[in-house]
Image (cartoon, rainbow, N blue to C red; front, side, top):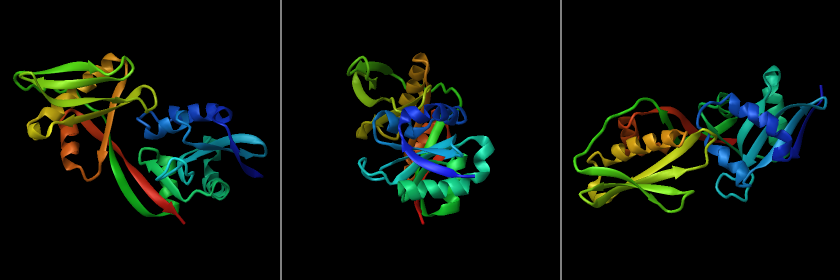
Length: 240
């Protein structure tokens, strides 16, 4: 059984990547890397048969190609994970793994092979609808462009919070962001705008998702209050 790892194009592995995403029905934060041209991709073959692929990008600088962020094998070949990943690491010269804990295949590789593992972020998915209200407060769209709308919360005519979306997740998920003006924090405006951004996402036929730094307890509490739930964590680890 002869295994090969060959640097290739996204087109060459697209069918395999479609399977990768189909097995991961959750927000995948690295989806943007391919479309933005930040990734190098490698095809895995055994006896000339396509059995999987892997992708790397730059951990700290986009021009670097030192961190594995996708690793996929067809199910009948997953017992060869250790052998194929070893060849992939050798060929790509990857020094790190970045992964989501809900991507169980790559997470298992990280815990088997990586050291100095860090938890970088908390990942959220929608859980339930909330009915938060604050008197005299309205949610409005304030478009920058038709393709990149932004939104604000206003109370008595004053902007108290703003937010919008980053279109970098796998369809149908969309990444929400928001910010509350400093003088209006800890008064419920963060959860309220997150709630309204969730509703707007569904109106656009998207499923809302979010993330925050693992140390940002206030942001985590805000998102939980808005009906989100933790669905995973973002990990990084150095390969030996």
